[in-house]
Amino acid sequence: MSYLKCLRSKGSGREYPKKALYVCEYDFSPLEADYDYEALKKDLTREKIEKGPLSLWRYRDLLPIDGEPTVGLHSGFTPLIRSKYLAETLGVKELYIKDDSVSHPTWSFKDRVVAVALSRARELGFDTVACASTGNLANAVSAHGAKAGFKRYIFIPHNLERGKVLGSLVYKPNVVAVKGNYDDVNRLCSEIVAKYPWGFVNVNLRPYYSEGSKTMGFEIAEQLGWKTPRHVVVPAASGSLITKIWKAFKEFEMLGLLKEKLNTSIYCAQAEGCSPIATAILNKSEHVLPVKPKTIAKSLAIGNPADGYYAKDVITSSGGGAAIVSDDEIRDGIKLLAETEGIFTETAGGVTVASTKKLIENGAINPNESIVICITGNGMKTQEAIQDVVGEELFIDPTLESFEATLHTSKTK
Amino acid sequence: MAIKVRIPTPLQKLTNDQAEVEVTANNVNDLIEALEKSYPGFKTRICDEAGKVRRFVNIYVNEEDIRFLQQETTAIKDGDEVSIIPAIAGGC
Image 1 (cartoon, rainbow over the protein chains, first blue to last red):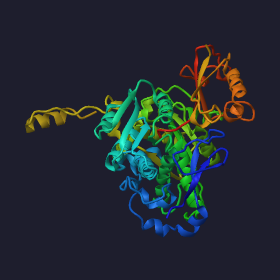
Image 2: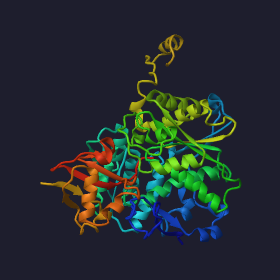
Image 3: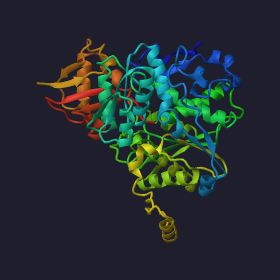
């Protein structure tokens, strides 16, 4: 039984069939999955969800597929960790880390969206899937697609971190490195999709793909005991994750699944070299102006954010805010999370930690209220970013004498 | 010689299924008016009520986003290529 009704234009509100469509023919606004909420109100309960699988598919009734899920059966349901040392360092009382750096199988929240996109791609009859990606999505489509038996075309900017390139190649898809930045890749893909009968997860499957991000929000609420936190800090590239975490909270509220009233503010974390959404929020400007990205946070290097306006609306209406952090602050953020919580995140996570620190220091977030930070990816993929700032190992001879001599004279930096 | 305009799939119904059309214009505003003349209904699709290009429409002149140039007043000349593309998403 599926509650997926149709696709609906976010702008004009017009209804579209639940096929591989992604843009409203009337005003070019994105299409979004729409559900039979009246039936869901009757059928969906906390108990039903709690009895579900320990994966993102426990929220299947709120995901856009018709039949049973077939891809990513072990993705999602990542830990929500109560922080001790990071909370102390930042001077806050109640801090949680939503840790998608350990998502199955490719260590980023993109495993969620691809699980949903490829389950739907199969229902729609595609045998080939593709994506435009800054790396994490590439890895997730490559891996999930291998197991699900899809032919795969992965389009990436030519200058990605080696870990992210290798992390796609190993699953043997067709990896196409485009001489340009992500926005160039994305644009190329929007032209390819018109010509080839492929399921592009972030283009013509986007209404399905993007719904997968809601599961991060569902999990945060369920793991907090069916409550939402007072503040959530989310990294932004296209801005999609911000809008979907908010949608998740709103859906739970509408369906009566929350034990407390929804009172959450959402914050946007971006890097100095690519902050179109955060800049618009901080300047209170009406428009989200595109930029040419230049930052070590390559997974957030989208200068022309498709969901920028919607993300800005969510942040404003939830009473949240934004922070912009430098490359050095990003590196410090990565190290701080590793040293205090034992979690090694990629550059996007560094942006989130550094932004959280800034939002607390400048008083935007009250240190006495509950905070969740979204860690969306794993640090092993972006080692280049911090290799010069993590110190060096101590080299010794294989003797006790050499060990003790070194022990007394030096320590790792 | 004229300006080549690449038409996105959702608008090809208006251009008799042509993915590429040719028009003559001096800037992007002119180009939109010229397209409207040849393919009635075109303008209301890519522009809002105030006549500004909709926020989910990206226009490129010779591969560059017009928001990095002079927006709708960006000059164009014969031989230039213009693409009209809906905004799409990736990353987080």
